[in-house]
Image 1 (cartoon, helix red, strand yellow):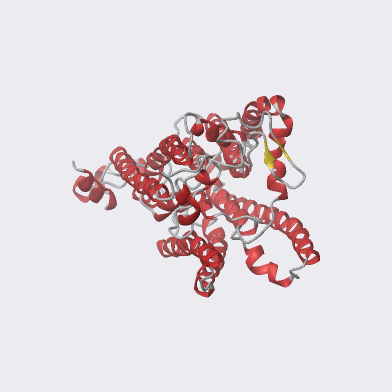
Image 2 (cartoon, helix red, strand yellow):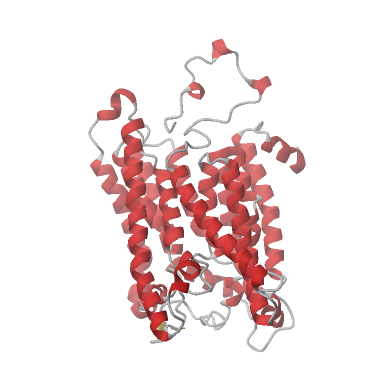
Length: 472
């Protein structure tokens, strides 16, 4: 079967899971190639003495080919090939020194590995892309197993073109999706699945923090027996030990990964945390705080400080409140159905984080895409979110270009505002939707066969494929 034929069969759902997964991986590989070529337009000869592409400063906003990967070739001692964190720190004005970077340790390690053998930002971008691409391909494979043709949203969607090599997001998305797959598709006992998923989410935390919030709903899923306690088994005692094992697996993984770095260079390890704590909601953060709250404060130093103090309190309070609300609604769903919808609750918690966090970088959309694929979100909502995301992913850089060159900014500012508020509105809507909708494919159920492959009604009675989805 050709790639084209496989893709056509994939889109109408007439292939096995394995064929669907292979097709998703092949299509994802093509998308990743396009994504790299897009970012590579900003990289290449001639180079300055420090290895920076001369074209980067002139083209990054005008051609929307900016990437943090290429940008951070300078300023974090990556170009000096210094092992991260060990000799680093942070200055009083928030500048990172001596190999310290603003990301958790596994992302810092990837950055260092990508720089090996590189003497300019173009080679660093290429090496980093080669390191990151396998994570995207594995994610495509797993999403196809979990959600069938909805995996195309990841494999060929605009977000992967815009953000695959914008930052180091692909590994953390992969660990999160792998945790979904282990729990949903795994055949071994729930406790074991919960512990493995806890380890995967903890590894994700060591890449980009946010998967840590999914450990709590995972624990509640294990505590309540997953989808194995419907009917008469629903009222069996909660599996407290299993929930604690899940938490212990996650916590132990975080300690095991971080402890060597903390012992080797505590100041450098701590610097990544302090950097994020000090970061303010400015024009580069694309958040509702800058576009909604900032105009209410003065532009002088007093107003700037008052705005920063307000956000530093309001943002975490609202994030925690959104987490509590998602968990409460999820528990009510458990009371109604007998199954705690841990993936839906996790998605809702992520929406709360994205809406209220002081930073909402464009590439964070990659975090959300697996939830849009795995959960049965109405497609009009999905398309609407992608439109708002493109408005940010493209518009914000054209906005910076207009400001930097003295061109009129009104149109691009309107595009950015549309993206910011459209995205925030849809995230609030998705918060509610994630908590209500079922999985696109029920756990442990194969895709519906083509009409000519379906057995007769007489032969289907009592089969697994006819069982109702416990999330409905």
